[in-house]
Image (tube, rainbow over the protein chains, first blue to last red):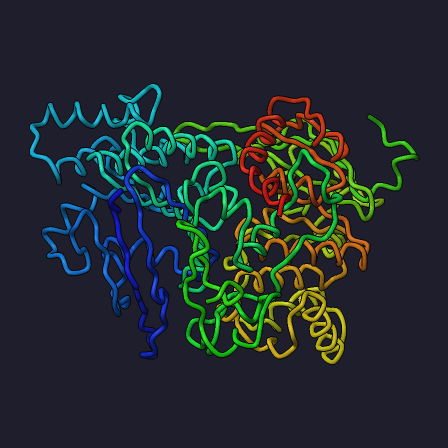
Length: 327
Length: 276
């Protein structure tokens, strides 16, 4: 199958006020295939939100592409003209931001905020636009689409606002949806509802999704493939069953062990110490030579301090950047 | 329910607590909201009580009442031998050091212009305790007890990572040697690997200092791991309470079951991991 989105050797840096450059993404390459859910897993500072913004060229003014290509449906987005890009944004690629209360305009009715997305991509008269808006809302709300369309964001709950954002993202039947921490500010059961909805939408609309999160638990049972990002580099990428079932990169292994034990099984006694990853993510302005995870790694070897490992394929779909596997 | 002698060992005993807020929904209309209704619970020394529930269930209101930041409408809060709801501000000042709070977002609960030293030593200044020399020594000891080196004492919050900031907030909360620490979603803003570090720190501090924790969270899996007892709240009321083992094994109330399903659904993963 041809890839829908192909990212090659993407490097993004931010310029600090002091004029120093700080590399947020350092040579990230991966593909997204039609209809799949790719989970991007990364802790704060891993570059996961930079990735979401970079794909649509929405970096803040001090962000800069150093190199790489982002090829979407055959088009290089990093070299596309603004007009071309506008067709992709919200049209072929839908974006869902982290904070639903910040992403919606507070004084415009939600229906209108969805219509404006549709109107930007399709020439429809008012009645058709209204009809289309309600159709889109009906996909994310089981009832009450009319009432929601007439509401202002503050009249909706957090979960409802997140659904409105989802409606905006799917309004033009995109081929790809990028969701950056779509459930971060929600209650656990609302969170489950939204994740369930993401899955349903993917099945109905056959669109691909990039689901970005810091929480591995969100991706379990939802993502088809997992990309683990650490300090701006891909640590591990592979099918979810393999990455979660038998993680290979020392970071992935350590990260998954940090989670509290399952409720139903008494495998670890309650109130026992959790496994931790010692230390913290590296400061990207002061990177040492060698593997970025080396200072926190329990599997380190001599070579890890002197050079950075390259991506090594373990199987056709599973790759790891670690000298333990050849590097 | 009268307080019997048997209950005298409780560190904290909340009985029949009710809290009503008056909300001005429009200029002319006033609406009364009942945030807590007939809430009773107790915490023994050195015990962790987890308070779980969805947002709006009244968890934080209860925490604020226990910390004497809000006055309940009715009901009693007994801490040790004191009845908190009956104390005046002057007497409360003597109690407050024993009940301390750690909030969810350390970025917002620490003064960005102050150094780590200023932040952690402020409680001494407010309570007018100790000489300058002793304040210095205690502050450095506190920083060390939460795993921050004393070289970091002159740094400001922006120079710390999220996990380090939460350590700083914990150090400040420990300054006046509290007996009860209220952790209001204190882990929610942290990365998984950092959450684990803070949980372990909390375990260590509990056994070395004999602390009791009121651990407020919406993460049932974490609550079940860190607590001895669980209290489940919904719409301002306690719907289920009991020892953690019992509740994790056989939750009775639908709200508990719903919270647990949300937690177990997201826990496909560690179970798979056990095979590694």
